[in-house]
Length: 271
Length: 270
Image (cartoon, rainbow over all chains, first blue to last red; front, side):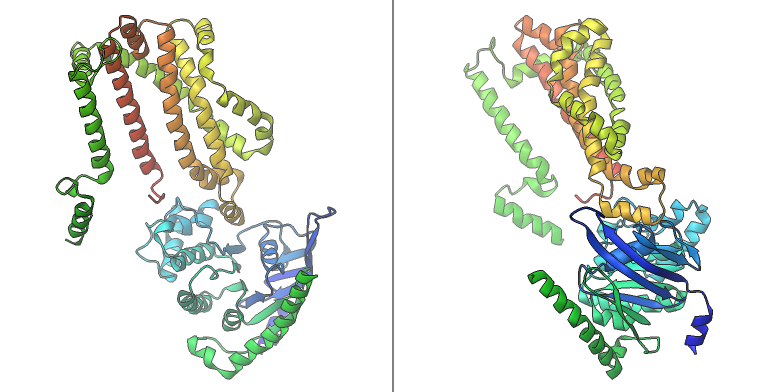
């Protein structure tokens, strides 16, 4: 049912044979991404998973516009992307919050740069601060917050600019395990509530299966998308979902794919 | 309750039982050190171990200070020196925008950095006679000396601050579409503020050196002049009293800057 619906619409984000080559033409040239293509539709939650150093972050930065691909093209709703813009917002692994700004100012960051009027900023900022559960912390500085709370600020900052696609670069990898599980659940809740499209990078198979509608598996360098796995577990998903047999099967399938890549990387390292 | 108990145990352990209840240790400890030094020094003076021609001791210095405070003599000198430092220092603040630009644009840094470093490390105080020659015996030469000595620490620290800006913050700002101007305002400048303040602190020390040396060399008013004058008359106690005034002044200025820093950079953990 969703299949037919999806196919008739233009993808919200499309990327076509992206290549990223660092230090092109020099002896230390690195081919980071090789012919990476994909189509992402509205409301999807895509996880990208792969061995470390496979170019996951490079792909995300390229999609954001922070990195210019050596070749290939990116489209949002059919129009080409040139550099960062308000259609995509990033959530960073190391939070990247301005230490001199309060929670409120940090969440307002993107809106302020866009030059939005104060009233609109206030409305949106308060809405998203409430959504991520940081009410009452508006005037705190980042160093006064825990890791989990910092990333809530990062997520609220991303949402506040109301992007078409939210790009999340291993957002929970610097957060402790318990907080992480709670954050995963909350992110899903917010996604469903706000009907946002997400691209999510992670190392964790568990996290990827739990969150995603589809998972892209990447190979070792040069990074390519070698496999796509559709996760047919209905939302809303809760921590109980993790006990389902099909959940475990999905994890196994992905691990089997990934194992080969990790082995290849090992061999490369030894050679 | 808990706190009082905790500090109580600490005090017992460090054996200064009654004092430290309200006064923070960062004040009480150096205060005790100072009291001991002054007491020993005074004792040496009272026991005639110090030749008053060569050196002096606290009570004599205090009497001299009382004298020039009562006559208002010291305020006349302080006003002039203060004005010279004020103007020179205000001019040296131009080092902040220059430092921001040099830190941000690699080409500017490449073109000027070696010269800035050279000028910073040169003992510029050696230029005092030249400045007197150029700008006269009056106030202007002192203002220019203060400027010349204090601009470089401000400039260099500002530049370092810009270059120390966290790359991930720059990346985040770019991702959220910051223009060049917004990048400066939202990321680079606030990130450099603590460095700028360090630069100002270093500059204050140099500014005081500049004004005192310049006044000692030429002119007939100002703290530097007062010091030279007293020393030429072998009024060692008076001479030292002026030095104490200078010392207190520089400590006060530095402390003032620390308060200023807390106001300006409340996000910094201490």
